Image (cartoon, rainbow, N blue to C red):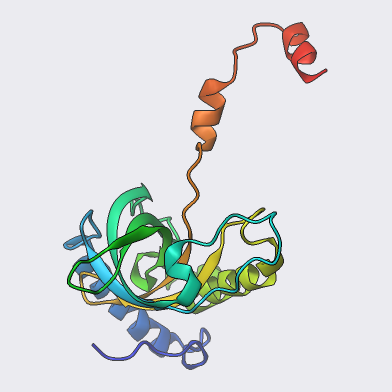
Length: 209
């Protein structure tokens, strides 16, 4: 597959070049629809070693993060699979395995995958949509920078972040994945379900007080 065009090469004011790029994305979207991510799909990534926490107020680093290395990631669940055309990313949980013959499981990670052809595409006949188009490079670059800025909070307030990586999707398209710590816990929906029901404003106020 040809290399992805650089952000600077896509001139939103040049209708011809934008239309060619748009046609490429549409073709890749059709290919992706025939071969979406699924449980059991694997990819190989190289994770850099993560600095160890300096005090006891942090969660312990997962085993795969201490020294870094090349690992096999196997998709096991999808909190946010691809569902509709107005979606900017997919979120999957993956098991982390060594590449050795034993294939030892070392834990789990969260994979936030940004696939250029599956993010909302602009209507080329509407100039406002074209200029509002969120280019994938800006999307994953901004999130990567944000997690790096939050490095001091990783491991307690936010998950540990293991960087941005290029992977090749099942349909052959290159995508970027942000990899972070998997933290076992309740979803917001589960938390709300566990809260007691209140039938009157007085009961709600009493709960707050």
